[in-house]
Amino acid sequence: MNTTLEQAQQEIVDEFAMLGDWQDRYEQLIELGKELPLIAPEFKTEENLVRGCQSRVWLTAEPRGATVHFTADSDAMITKGLVALLVRVLNDRTPQEIMSTPLTFIDKIGLREHLSPNRSNGLVAMLDQMKRYALVYSTKQ
Image (tube, rainbow, N blue to C red; front, side, top):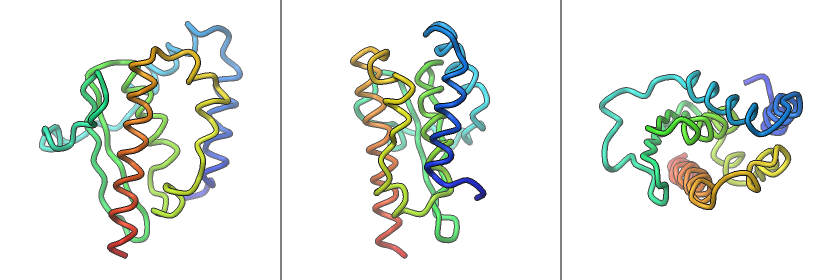
C-alpha cells in the first residue's frame, strides 16, 4: 500500500473540502458507495450484519498476509458511502494500524455533526466491527 493511514484520511478531508454544502457531500457519499466493490452474495449473511446499524450493513474481513482485507455492502445509499469511506481508509492495513490509529477524518469533514443519531451510531458500530476483526487477526498472527 502506497499511502499511510494518515495520508488516506487526509485525501478524504481534501476531497470533501472541495465540496460546497452538505447536499454535495451527501451526493459524494452516495457516489463513494456506488464505487464500493461488490461483496460476494455468499457474504450477505446474518452473521456478517453489523449490529447497531439501522440499515442493513454487511461487513467481512479476511487476513491477507500481515494485513486485513475488508469487503462491505449496505442496502442504504448514504450508509453504503459511510462504510466505503471506512473501507477506503482501513482496508489492507495491519491489525495494529486499524486498532491504534484514530480516525480523525470523520470529525474533520464534519460527518459526526451532519449525520442523524442513527447513522452516527451505525458509523461507530461499523468502525467497532472493523476493529474487532483486526483484534481477532492480530491474535492469530
